[in-house]
Amino acid sequence: MSMEIALVGAPTDIGAGARGASMGPQALRVAGLAAALERQGYRVLDTGDLAGPGNPWQPPVHGYRHLEQVQSWNALVFQAVTAQLREGRLPLVLGGDHSLGVGSVGAVARHCRRAGRPLRVFWLDAHTDFNTAWLTPSGNLHGMPVACLCGFGPAGLVDLGGSEPALRPEELRMIGIRSVDAGEREFVHEQRLDVYDMRTIDERGMRAVMEAALGGLPADAHVHVSFDVDFLDPDYAPGVGTTVRGGPTWREAQLCMEMLADTGRVGSVDIVELNPALDVRNGTALVAVELVESLFGKSTLVRRPRG
Ligand SMILES: [Mn+2]
Image (cartoon, rainbow, N blue to C red):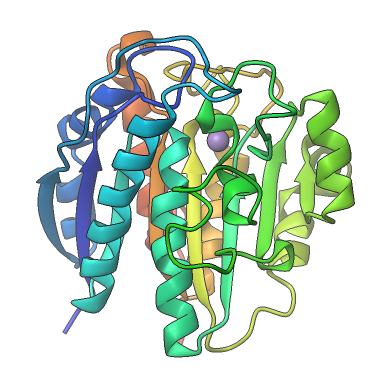
């Protein structure tokens, strides 16, 4: 019996600074995500789209934009991911902007804690998403999910899964980072986040970086991959709201995904920040699908099966 993957659509741009990530789930479906996974032998259940509040497009209030709506969306994502994990399916959240990581990773963290399983979260992103209301210039909550998961943020997000923070910094690995706000940088250091930035990838190569990031992974660990499409160099993935040049190439990103797949422990995934309004002929969605194929074990090279 093969693993069943549950697609959970979360069509919102409520935490972003640009409109359009709300169309991400549909663009991924149109790009053939389910069929690609089925070709690899997985059963895929598309649970459809969650229905949260619309985007009122208001300025920040006390340092947060659309806090109430972000809380509502994350509560829905938290419930949906929890439900799929309980059914023994692998939740694949289709964003939506990255503020949804609070609900998705929060649900996974609580599930692992209750099962006594160690968790490791791979945050593939151009940004550390470790802002707080007192540090962020914009108030956009898609820049704050990691801080919220570590216990720094507003009520309704930091306590989504209970009174303890969802994550400890040592459970996180950040790959591809190349844009960090000044105050955020100090906070990242203060909290000792394990960050593999682009300079590290340039100097050591993706293979050595992933070996380091995967080092000491416990045999029974649950690996969560939170894939912000802006992780990729915009030459390959223009369809995101916050492009930062100098990211991983298509090949480097493939290797990253393949090495995550090789662990055999990927148990939940987010694909976020895909913005079809900024894309070219849905090409970024197609690249995202190719990378997810690798994350689920498709090798781009012809290899002899192991075993
Ligand atoms: Mn992000």
